[in-house]
Length: 217
Image 1 (cartoon, rainbow, N blue to C red):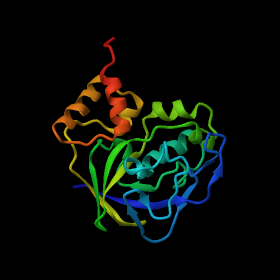
Image 2 (spheres, rainbow, N blue to C red; image 1 turned 45 degrees about the vertical axis):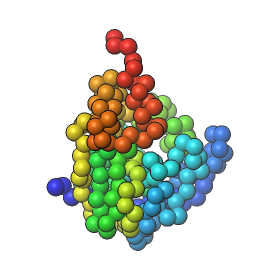
Image 3 (cartoon, rainbow, N blue to C red; image 1 turned 180 degrees about the horizontal axis):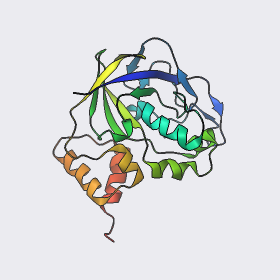
């Protein structure tokens, strides 16, 4: 069983003004020292300004990988420090964008998180990055990172190790679902849910049903 490691735990540093409907954003997350308690709605002390579209049980934690960040650093010609994408966990030894929807991450501290869906880029993210065409660029790349729900609370800090377990057999990965969802992927997710192998988040299920009902080309 492959062991991965947390490179940084990030929480909101400050709320920033934003041109969106909420008026502020909590995307400015930065690494903090020491272990932080993660509970049903995320890390202690973290904030989501737009709770209608971010946060909640199915988006309690957002994880991004060092290897994907390195790819973006080369592509953009700039550093991608931990927290820049608004992630709570910067991880290494695993590619979060390749996580299978429904797989679980068991941390050495006892916490257990479950992958729920990819991060869908939004206008706030684009404004934060200041890159032309960022939403479509990020989507096409499929380097989504992963949202996770908290199955078992616990303390997580930089250096905490974790392993992947309970990988569902449907095989749909968050990054590929973001970049190019297909009817076959959608049906695989629906079948897995019907068989009790995965619990689809309501927001994801709605989109899965839409993709599953597409008329074949």
